[in-house]
Image 1 (cartoon, rainbow, N blue to C red):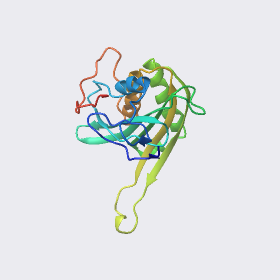
Image 2: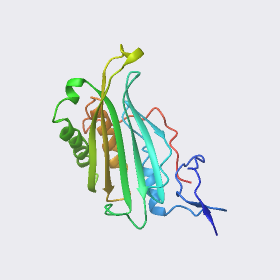
Image 3: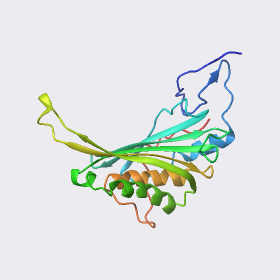
Image 4: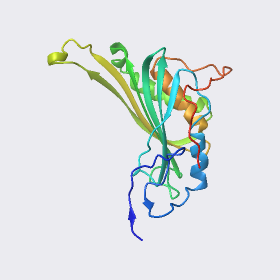
Length: 216
């Protein structure tokens, strides 16, 4: 039987499918993937964060899922990010297991902060310390921290210079429950936005978007 690669299907309520689909009824995703996918969409997050379901990349692994998020203070968007879960039952080189999480965070920052030579190590420590604080067991973590400066020219000469921090990271979770990893990613985004993490004894509130999809 021939196969064809199709765009990511966004059937309600679950957008995560295998990257290669066959004609006829597709096989159900593996149970381990479905269990992990459920934990990728938490029922509660801190009030500054708005979560949304986004398409997952199709060609990085046989199965994938993704969520996007924005951090707000009042109506100002301070940071954006996405968290992608990849699953390959056979694993891939450098993964140390069948799962891999890929995170991206971008936040506006003051020029004097982005010019600090210690920003890279500090930003990376935000991620690793958040994972450890939430008890998220992980392995084979790696990533980059980038500082971007945007200047206007021509008819944009009067636009202010803007500076941004971008952090891209990936790591292998060591269990199927990804809720602690999602919480750490949310803390990372808040720290990049200049918002400190919640104290351990303070509970998060329900997110603005509550219609998180569930696995069929």
